[in-house]
Length: 582
Image (cartoon, rainbow, N blue to C red; front, side, top):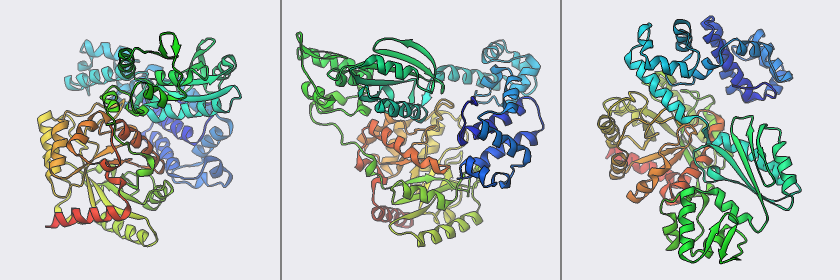
């Protein structure tokens, strides 16, 4: 939950949503609850800053933001706190706020459980499920009780785990401060963040300095530190206000490359590398490489690997998944870089569940240096996401044609995210699908199918001649929903056989296809497409996360289709269309 000590637009949006949820827990009028959620959505879709909206008196003119809401938003923006929010939050048991984070337990169910059984925490809910007490109250059965137990187990497993962008944003703020400190010679993020893991547990920093005490003092007194866990001469640990632990290690300039390598990890990579060093008569630890007692100096990590007879292994690959063997015979892959990306697909707009216009999403893509963007709003069966009807498609394509007339060296491609229906067929008939330049086929329903059924469902969709790209292959939502059961290798093999693309969905909540499956995918000759699944302008920036994940999976420029230039992509999609109509 948000603390009102310092707020920006993002915080205000979160607070409005929380107020709506609090009111639902208290059983308030549904219209009143929705008013806060709606106000949050309106602000999220509005490009102006809160301060500008207030100064220009545009805030009260936004749809759904009346006088009362305007006053509360202004109070938050100007004073950094809101008494109404604080009082409301205090009136609700904190355990209830935790309970609604469970999949399948929304505010209404949490309120019902509290009123009927007095349950006000996840622990009490788990015990009640074990005792079958939920079966005694209306609205719950054995199936829903078992699903809640599964959700609790998943929640326990996910505690103290953070999505990469959230942890990375905190780490960058701290790193920027450290690098400006006069006592710091060099500083770097280390650990799983440097390896670009999609989920991290903490933030690690390594600093080279001649004055570790000065750096320690700066680190523990940072404005985003909530409390100090430990504070030593060269090490410190803090708990940040964002809820994540941050650790720092200070060393000398000579030790810095070795310590940075050591604390970048992974543990398995480090163990394997130390074992290799040992066979060469070299002792390796976080302070250096030693022949007997003699230090083998290294100016940087590149020299460390060279001393061990290896090519430089990029941080993303340091997971002990064959990278050391590959580096020893000069077989490391040439990894994709940000500058290799020329465009992207899987971008939503106001035509379905996006929060921005097609023009705004295209402008964001251009600003990111891309040559093209593929708009792919939801198909008609996705009623929950305002899926497009035939008339919407016609209107959207006219708008795209008009926008494309005004572009030079940039293009919007016409696409759709078509639901894969339960029987494996695509939403819309062939005549409508023919109107699109590309089709992303995705599962959005019936997640509980058995593995054989789900695999057959997706394979049928991949064999459909209209399918260009398979979207978010396993349907997982990180820290929220497990992937559905599916035979991933069969899906990859089918995609390769039928010349289909599988996306690397780099929405931070998905990161799907998992990077761990990319080695097999690359071996089989699969082409991937790095897509942001962007529903708002800021979503385009998630492509950076996608590049990191593709690098972790060993993917190079030739393995990713959206490294094609605009002309190459136009030719590729025309070829797909010719193949479709042949």
